[in-house]
Image (cartoon, rainbow, N blue to C red; front, side, top):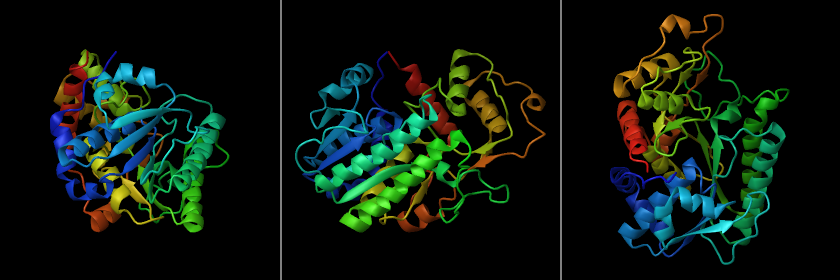
Length: 343
């Protein structure tokens, strides 16, 4: 199956809110790991659009284990001369030749069902290897795509978790591999900044929605959109947790802004601070896209405290004027419309 380009209005939205920042990349080169994933495709397409519209003359090299499979998925990017793919695994890829001004490390395994040890190894070794490459390539700026998972379980007394919270995942739980790996990745970034002067910026990402988000993985909002689009009942295992969702075009704005403007070794949460229960999310998807939802009393777990995974984004707003621009209902409509246009 091939996927269509990102919507024109989304590309315009990203450029409108990042336009002055792109001068950093004029005539430069950016290297992106995880280039073929959900985040990566948004980075590639928004880069290509800004590069063309602003005449930057910049180049992007994206890391991919299987470039051929990627181009089958997004064939329109084969025609983009400013983007090339570099074959390799994030843990041990051969360094591309030449210098690079910016590096974005978005390679991870969060959406794939892999054993915890493989996930931990991929995150830690991949981050270390990419940092080594950035230093060797003479990069000035480095963006590490981290995660809100570094905080561990969000305490019930905290409605919106801030960057200053020093909690951590449970080291005795193998399912903590993702969060622990990202924590180590952040430490490695701090070391690279201290030892080499690399301006390492940190984006702690939460939950998102938009084109290219898998509809058949462990993302509740993607599963709900899939069910609604198929006309099936929206299936909810537990409606009590609180989550929040940032549309992918806003995500791209935040990522590029943090790369270009973020303070070194100062983490920034990325996500929406507009919390919603999973049950209410299902109802919103049903109301917006169609489909029915199971009765609410069958999807709440009344025997457990409602878990939260919602960021405080005050730091990103106060320091870089980043906020949620596209509301949830519009995010759902845009996501479904794009999926319906697939070939």
